[in-house]
Length: 278
Image (tube, helix red, strand yellow):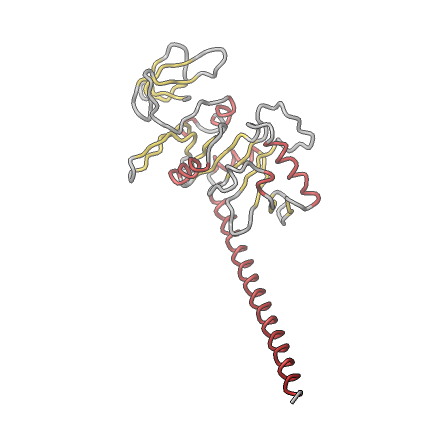
């Protein structure tokens, strides 16, 4: 972890330091070397948070974009007495979890149910195929086969979502933001990696992806209007889905009525022909 408590203050690891875990209260020692980023570890073999994972430089850079008082906050559920350390929790209670390593769908669902008001920021270049797969789908935007343009040039309706994004994330109940910048080693011929791509939860059959800069995202989080914007957009999707469902229902009823009319017409014609024989 990045912080320990020393004299009640959140302090980053430095050589020879000892501190206390803000979650479980156990002793921590600093781990500082040439090959791993400086971090705190429990003095005794003890893992107070089973969700915690070894951090990469990618994690640290993202955390560092937010105030220290928002980083590594213990989130406690009074109902279940369960607690976990959130990567970032804003003053408005929004949880941001930065995920680099693989996570299975069951664990993802458990975390989403625990935090509820949260978003994921995912390292989209963890696997070699992740960015090329996204790139292939995004470039089809110009052919309108996977990414469909909307009235907003930065929001796209998307089909074949599993062609573009890792399957473990496409059923998430909260927004998932993919960061394809990674360590900067991959080519960016189309200048797509400088932005973030937010996959919204599925509403009916509708799937949408928003494209925005890192600066826009960070500013919206710090300003506190991110959650409002997302809620507003998702409510709009619910309305759209309701309209589509009603329209499809009317079309189905109309087709049924036409089919009944054609059937009755054929039936009457058949009866008329039969009656003329006698």
